[in-house]
Amino acid sequence: MKVICVIPARYASTRLPGKPLSMICGKPMIQRVYEQACKAEVPEKVVVATDHELVFNAVKAFGGNVIMTSADHPSGTDRLAEVALNYPDVAVIVNVQGDEPMIPPEVIDDLANTFEDDADLSMATLKVEMQQEDYDNPAAVKVVTDLNGYALYFSRSQIPYPRNMPADYKVFKHVGIYAYRRDFLLKYAALTPTPLERAESLEQLRALENGYKIKVLESDFQGVGVDTPEDLARVNEIFAKIEE
Image (tube, rainbow, N blue to C red; front, side):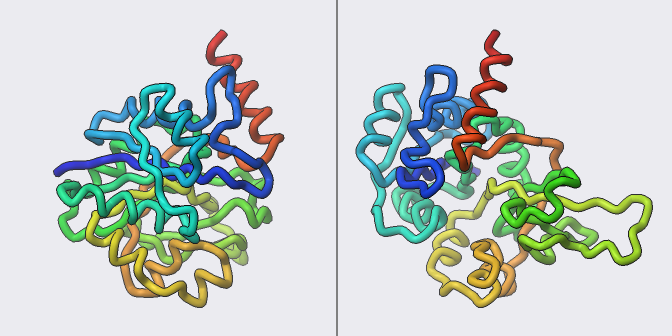
């Protein structure tokens, strides 16, 4: 089973313009993400998919693999699908977000290996136990799963609602790393946006609304996604301590 890892890196960002090139202890963020992804053992290749020449040149400068994609894609999934068209011999594509510089390589391997264990699996993602201060934070996406670990729903609201809270009650946060079978990815990207997807602004709901199953692996990964200048400052502090 051939696996590749793709990192979509859109240059524009409302809260942090030029985000992929934001510096983290002397290296652009896209390089930090790329280097983490390259530590994974299962993918045969790591590729950055960007829409901007500055990001393209930055990846080339540190020796990374990069593909220039259309600037008109409405989502990272569409950008990922464009890359998939260039790799017809690939079975599984792992999508690592370009703003997760702390992504553990073993998470990438775990997601990829899930497809070896389940021939019918089309899509997989990740969840971690959520900190209580994020329960009411709409930017922290929650996920609930069935007893077999498949997603029932994703929401920006707290789910499940704790009306009768059991002793082992947990709220899980969705981590935006995905893995897809290539054929499913191309089909999924071509689907029309769905009502719940538009209501929550969560693209993964498109798969659920169309009847597809999403396997959700549990992890203890508590990274810091970089969306704001404050996030960037926090990540710089973390890397500075790691590299001392």
